[in-house]
Image (tube, rainbow, N blue to C red; front, side, top):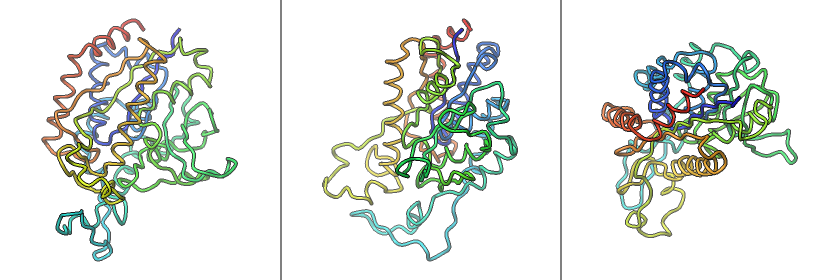
Length: 341
């Protein structure tokens, strides 16, 4: 019998897309999707979905959190007046609104997310999960268990693969996985130090989920694994030749500039490039490894929706992407895969 894995990418508020698609696919298969999933892998916002589903939170509840409570999750980090230096983009006048936008401190705190996680996860740990595999990515910023001590990639999981995470609170794992550099502060897990978003090494966590399943002997070979992998949508973003200008001007300020600039350049271009391209690269590798046992659903967005954008127009764009995804060939293949479970 195949091991059935559901994998969810990172992408901030665009978890609305992946959670909505999971809900619709579950409905289209009369509940067969979530009834038959053996394991969940997630990164960042995808870890919130994966952990939530792994402990039995209703998928419609997760959709509601993304749709109605994003402003609570993205709690602004209010720096004291006068503490933020003036930062000027080359060729642009000083803008006071940009002085504290991720330069002196993280844009947001975890206060809102912490309250939400507490409501649904409480103090449950990985050790409290007995019948489902959960695996979430996070970057450990200093690991003294290695030689030499250094930062390491980790996939926190229910099956003691790589380390024994039995006593790690699920809420801590979720915040560690979601601690996107600049957006959120590093998150400390007691006894393990600080972590940052696993998107720095695998924003698409599908291979990490496959690894845990194999190492835990939940499947004896990749031929026994079937995966439905949900992205959070992608758009026409990048750095066009016209946006480069003088190439030697691309130092730390340009790569970390906190607002959109040029035609397709996103805010914090180096961070968003890293998150999106790790997802793309891992998706390509997994497709080569699993072939038609991997179904990837990742819709195109009419325009970019950044991880912390959630006004009415952003949701309209995400809703259209969701509708387009449900009319795609990948959607039909996903339904066919689930019907055979």
